[in-house]
Image (cartoon, rainbow, N blue to C red; front, side, top):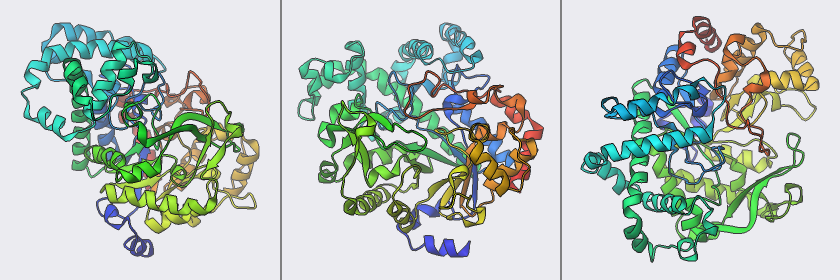
Length: 526
């Protein structure tokens, strides 16, 4: 450990590590939408994380990793954000809002969410309709008092992105949720020069979005403050790109390149590649503006998280893209010349380190050029290791004591099979892994094997060891869905109705009370 500590002190991220510590960290990935708490309303809510913090403190975890929490549109994917800064109002803890218990009408509305809490999956459309209706009434109920609140006033002054987002949402609603490129021409082309005219016109309607964002930020910042009292770190997630139909693209069009759209190249896990449809960045224009957009985005999360995950970090070096009418298989890397890749990635990651005190952690999975790994290490930024994918050039598995220390070890990700799905669905890999572990191969993992695997995952040479909560719940069949495929969160490159709708089978209160699970996790970490 002393060698890696000494090395980190020489890197560009040295200061960023000071608040985290270069000791071993152990944690759990909790997709907030998947939480099922007794007081929540059909989806996990911000203040539900208080219970997660208490449980982590109890079992010995010191990191909670979240998926992105940005506001989304029709697509429930948290990586398809309609704002780089605005938080999702779906996660507001309604029952905890000030004054709700004194309002019979709002209390009656709360009861209408009860049925949603019994569903196996998140029902986004029904949930959005009910939450919007509740928040509209709550806004009318509290706004006269809230607009006099100094804390609310400070929130409005601090967050420069609020006006463009609130104006975007207001116009979007008035235009019956059409994409901005189908709005009237004058509304499509609002800029800094004529912004004040439209703010004056729509300001009353914009207040609703000011208030709901304030509620989101107030609750999530409370979670971070509580985590500080338990010495638990929250690892947020910053998607590299944003939706074309976002307030960012609508209002900052010069920062984006619309000639091609982003995706991922074909690989062993997605033979046709992926076409995300996101516009590319115009990095020259971002540089001309001194990266204001990125700086604003990173400053915004500093009151919410202690660290952040950089999604698809290879996109800072080079990105797979295609014409809007081309399939992903016809795409190409941009820039095409590999001579530019290292300089791109190094400069852009250095910019992010310069722009925020938070420690970044990179998602560097997939087809990754070797220069990415070298650059991350040089800068002092962790990458990601997924145990089933950590193989040698000869097809064997890399020994756990040979993992790059600047990394997170996981047994699966939200975009992959769970370990059990991989084990049962990829016979060639699982039989090799059984041999690697000196296990007698069986088509189904035993409790002992699952526990041993998780212990391995927490004792590699990585500095971070973080797994999906569902991988721990799978130690006990009654804590997971009977069909292992129902434990899958997302299948990249697909539009499956089950994507991003996953919910944990037990309530979190039941998880907290499960003594055997608690003891298993303590043994895994020991």
